[in-house]
Image 1: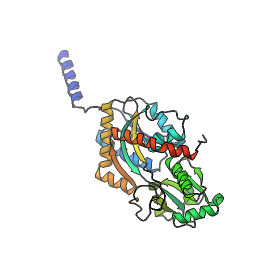
Image 2: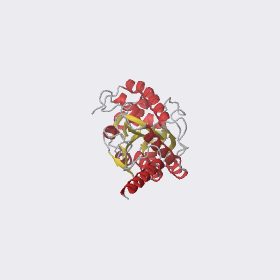
Image 3: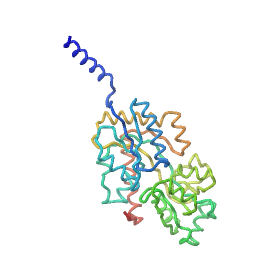
Image 4: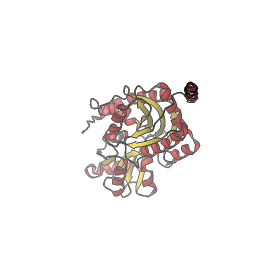
Length: 323
């Protein structure tokens, strides 16, 4: 009797193992995001996590580890076990920009310490001003700053060394004006400062400024994409206004280096299914995002291309991190 029970138990276990898809795992999956609640990155992570949980039939939670422009989250995921239970959701900045802007200071290597999982979406950045600023167009803003850069030239971003920060630097150089960067500790405080008039302008993720524009507390002057943002069809691109400035930032998922390929594949498919789900896709577009759902190989190529693209302008800007 004991022998039959053991044999049946073994057969049942074998059958269950055969039924599990490649890369299947147990335990709670943690999506770590390096920015505080309220930011577009946080909202995207939570939407994707909810859908992945249903697809994977596995608990998926979001863990905000804000600080250092996202670098704290990257360091946490680098140190995590490569078992597919800890993932990083991050924008392009921490992976393709910071190796240049924080050269010699990063405690992680984007290309050696992480395995690409899925490219979730593209997004736009733009330049906005607080509602009390006496400007209606980008040309007005340039003239206003030129008139008194010490008073009017301050602009905010959610983090030093980020794409919005450097886009502000590049725009100032292109326009021949002096703009002073004011870094905030995350999107929410930067948007609050703009709405309150503590700072006159912000170089920011367009999706993050949308609620302020809708409430009449800010005006978006221009966006940095190749095309206009569907959420703001009346707002021109910098290129349309005569500036050779284009930025195509993105959000993506990464796992610790060494995570098994079968596990990466399983997670990548679940993430792609999330952003390609019609209801989720619609929700993300309404947030101002452009859902993509690219797999690991395409994400790796995009990451490398952006690393090569942003190096020269960052070095030319002369930026030196304060921390």
